[in-house]
Image 1 (cartoon, rainbow, N blue to C red):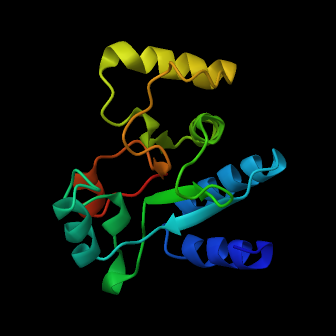
Image 2: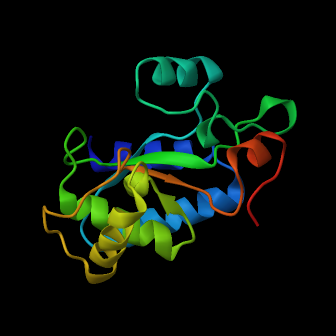
Amino acid sequence: MNEADRKQRNQQRLTECFPKFAARVDAVIKDLEAQGIRPRIQDAHRSIADQIFAFNHGFSKVRFGFHNVTGANGKAESLAVDLLDDDHPLDPPRKYIILLAGAAQAHGLHPGSFFGLPQSLRAGLSKAIQDQNFDPKIKIGFDPTHIEATGLSIAEAKAGKRPT
């Protein structure tokens, strides 16, 4: 995607997010851009139908998730985004995944690179993020380009709670 289109897409997708979450995602994007990376928000808000499709086809473990959150009158208030490396959208390099996870954590967000990892492997990934170690022996969770809000559960977000 050309640079202008990527930036426009990111700005549009940020409008699908709860404002405090959007500000954090924007900060993650800026951090990655400062390192010469071109992050692109692939998905922010997702309809329930799209979520069920993702669930039924093994792309998600939940029927309702942070991507599906809405506010008053059904306004999109996503609390998750899928943030791809625009230069490698189908096969993000390990370096991107670890830098994304570090930037997400630095801004109070949870990276999907931890999803599905047993506790015994989480420490290794945490250390890799801290040290910016891109060693291929380090295990990565099942949704490495996903980042989401912290401090609330999916059920709480569905019921109207939002991050502060």
